[in-house]
Structures are given as structure tokens and as C-alpha cells.
Length: 400
Image (cartoon, rainbow, N blue to C red):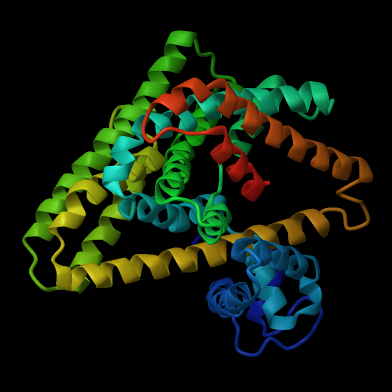
């Protein structure tokens, strides 16, 4: 993980004291504080996991709120506060490289391939055109309904923001659906959509970011970049999947090596897609989705029964660790960088008007989600296992 190592906190930590003069023991640098934070985060995650089991309160939102509170008051938390300040300076690219491959690959790897094939048209409809329509509607809401000026959001940056918000996080939703007794096929549809729309949102964001940076792109060039990102990522994921499946097939009764292969493939496909020049633009997320689904269809069948349980347990724990840390870090960054507003501590970063607009944005997101699904409802009703308005309303009652 790459962290910023400049600034008074790190020099103070190196001397054994924090910014307020309190002793910080033998913590001598940013790297040590990061390691301390990771284990502290997992400890807190264990506590909140128990709270989740006993109360049913969604796990990840609890961590997010805890992160905000800890980040806002980090100056009063001693060594733990110093580690929070350190982690708030983490390089965003480092976060993506560490956590994104685990979360995306595991979701595809553990997908039910037979149900996914049956629902493919529905999943693609929800994850591609629905996301595009939702991003446009949210951009319209920002500019027209909420009234943001060009000084804050241009139409293009509003579309970028809409693309980000159109990426659904279904961890809590799936838990609620399971508790409510939703059918397996309905759960699979929502999980499949979440898996694919991660890639769609990133592709839309990448294309829009290129234009925002000043690169002039014709409609034909936009289509070309879209095809490169999606098709290139798909092919790269399949290539890694083929090699992984062949290697796994040659292994007998060695679960450690099987886990090692899946982990290597997961990280290497993302690294190659995002950092190696292969002549075309490739989406790392699309490559991860492709790899995960290929392994679900053809890779898992080559894992012997003795190793299958170990592989499943490893990835389940890896995802738990990633979700725990990433939601806590997200809250901490908001607490430290937004609420504390370290550049000008006397300024108020969030105004009352911002809070009103936040509530309005939430409503606009709800309407955009409903509108995008309603627009493509004729397709969703006819393919896969079908989709009824009752199931749509059931989803919204859980999600919103």
C-alpha cells in the first residue's frame, strides 16, 4: 500500500511522539502505523460482526459510520488516531490495487454459472443500458433539479458523478433479501448485476475522464474506446483463466497451491490490464469479471474436492478483510479530510444547503434507479426467469 510519507505526522511518529506531544511508543514510521491500523480494523470488524449477528444492523454501514466518527476525532485517539491520520493519506491507486481484485474476482468466482447463463440477458440489461440511463438521469438531477452551477459541476462532470453513483453495492441488500426469504434466482440476478455494472461504471467513468482532461473524441472514437475496454478486458480475463484452469487441473490434493494460483491470477490480470501497454486500452475490472466468471464455469470443476473447501474458505475470509478495511478507510477519509478540513480548520466544509441537497440527491438516485428499470421492464420480464413488478418493489423496499 502506498502512503504519503511527507508531513509533520510522520516526522513526529519517527521521534516517538504524535503532533500533540503524547508518547507513541516504538511506532517509528508511517508503514508501522499502517500495519497497526490493519490489525486494529480487523479487531473492530470482529466486534461489529458480532453486533451484526445479534442485532441485524448491516455490517458495512456500521463500519462506515465508525470510520467517520473516528476520523473526525482522531486527534483524541492517541496512537490509533495517528494511524487513522496516516491511512487517510493512502494513495487511491494503492487502495484499488489491493482491495478491488479480491472483491471483484471473488464475486465472479463464486457465482452460480448455470443461473448466470440463464439470466445473462437480464443481467446485461440491468448492468449496461440501465446504468447508462441512470447516469444520465443523475447528471440531469444535479444540474436541473438540484441546481448545481457549472462552477461546481459541468454536464460532463455531472455525468461522471452519475456513473459513480450508478454502481450498486449489494452487500447489505443481498443480506436483507436473504433474511426476507427472497428466491435464489432473484438473489443471483441482483448479484450478477452488481458484478457486471462495476465494469460498466468504470468504463463510462474512464471515457468521460478522458474528455474532461481535454481529449477530443468523436462518437466513433468513443465507441472504439468502449469496445477496447470491454472486449480487451474480456479476452485478457479468459486468457488468464485458461492458464489457471490448466495449472489447477495438474494439481492433486494440494489446496495451498490451488489457493496460490487463484490469488496470483486475480492480482496479475488486474495489474497487467491497468499497467502494461498491450497496444489497446483494457479495463482491469472487466478483466477481473471475465476471469472470475471463467473460473466459475470451467476452473472450479477442475479443483478436487479436498481443495475446494480450503479455496472457498480463503476467499470468503479475504473478502471479509477487504470489506472491513475498505469501508472503515472510506469513513476515515471523510472524517479527516472533509469534516476536519485540515487545509482550513476554521472553515465549514459542509453547509446546511449541502445537507438538503444530499437528501435531494438520495431521492433522485432512487427515482433514477426505478426509472431505468421501468424503461427496460419489457426485456426483463421476457428473459431469464422473468422479473415481476412485485420483485422490483421488493428490491426497493430492501434497498431504500
